[in-house]
Amino acid sequence: MKTPDLPDNEALRVQALHALKVLDTAAEERFDRITRMARRLFRVPIALVTLVDENRQWFKSNCGLSAQETSRDISFCGHAILGDDILMIPDTLQDPRFADNPLVTATPHIRFYAGCPLSYTQDLKLGTLCLIDDKPRQFDDEDANTLRDLAAMVEAELRSFQASTSDELTGISNRRGFQFLSRYSLNDCQRHQVSASLVFIDLDKFKQINDNYGHHAGDRALVTFAGLLKSVFRDVDIIARFGGDEFVVLVAGKKRFETERDVNRLQQQLEQSNAMRTEPYQLGFSYGIVEFEPQQPQEIDALLAAGDALMYQLKKTKAHR
Image 1: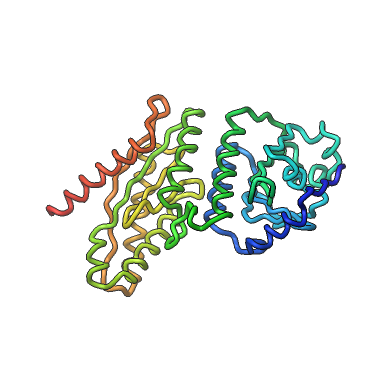
Image 2: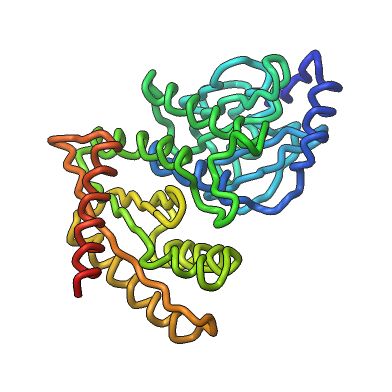
């Protein structure tokens, strides 16, 4: 086993990492949604956002691994931050640097590793977005480009809240994050010839809540509804506040009729929530569901427009009742 070398700018690198004040902070949805997406897109059991500290590698996002950190001297990511591009190891048993590494010979039994360095500046690599499998595998150019793009999204989250892909109020994706993640999700569905469904949702009479009870009440309503979305849909589904009182969900691997069942469960949970809450208003929503067919793929903007149109038809029907 080879212990990773230290970068030439190690002191500056560690200083920059500590200045971010991210080490040992709680898990955050804005990072976790990226590792969930990576694990699903690449069909690996483990995807991590790692930050390489002085003597350890710590996982800001941990999708599939029980540990929260490991020693730096046995880390794969310690090697990855020495380069400018992806460190890819198709089979660790065939690589003398890693064949007898404890992370290979014992849990989690790493056989495949791909780690893309996360840059604070061009020369300061703070950690990686990495993929791990317990089976050897190959990694083509398309895979590499996708991993680089997802890593760039992690970098944006690390660098600046203004560049965030999360909605500050609800903690789910914002429009920017949805556009980014949904593109890769639909490409993956087309690549593997599986369906997907997009749900476009608009809260009913939300303006009246703001006008009659104030924006704090409106904010609480948005947070409540986002929580219900997260409880009904799966971790691998992309849930976003698209703007104002509009929400969207991209459900990979499900046809329209299957997603309709999820929306019915959402309606039931919302009714239960309304019955238990003390606020002087009731929450409701209108929606439109559009199916993505991999044989005749549509761009995400076309799906959003179609979903929005269906939602508006339902809202118009309700208004005339």
